[in-house]
Image: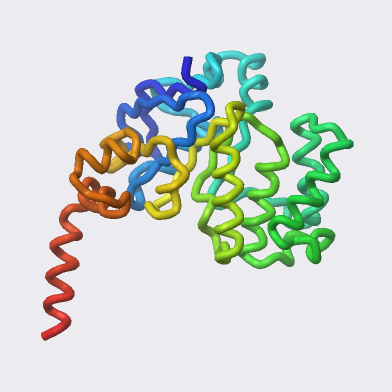
Length: 260
């Protein structure tokens, strides 16, 4: 049984279709990277998986339990799932430390672990100096870091991360997040779904990549299989060839024109 099952999902914003018959699975202890151009439906798919949005049709099951099927099952899913939205919700009037402790308590993390973990996460993301200042005073990058820390402090077994590397993150923050996700991706008790538009950020992380375009799944396979399918060596060129072949010609035409 896969850890996450997405079955024939349809989602709309008003009358505009966003997801069209989307199905996929995420195996236990797998890191699945969801990629596609702006407007492809990546954030909507992750919101549906995380339970923040209800699909018009279809269903999501996590660890064998369907979302919204019953209060008992939904609570069990929420207890093991952590969701990083874009933009993330942050209580601006509270400090970063207060926020982390509050999130940890929602997930029933024992105090003996919670306080030490909070301190380590604040240090990890270079937030110790602002830990007791209101989040409203944080920079854009610091807000993204405290949001990421709030996901990690849950010790959740299912992580749904919408663009964890964006939002003003500095190079050190991006490197730190990649290393942490790489470590988690090797654990047998953690399953990760994350969306990102940048191929090079997931090439060494993802077990499989799901490519979306116009609300549909174009491909879902290992990076090696996608390379063979497109006869390209890097995920970046694979992505461009499969998702935006017209941009290759347009880029060449522009470069040639600009040199004249």
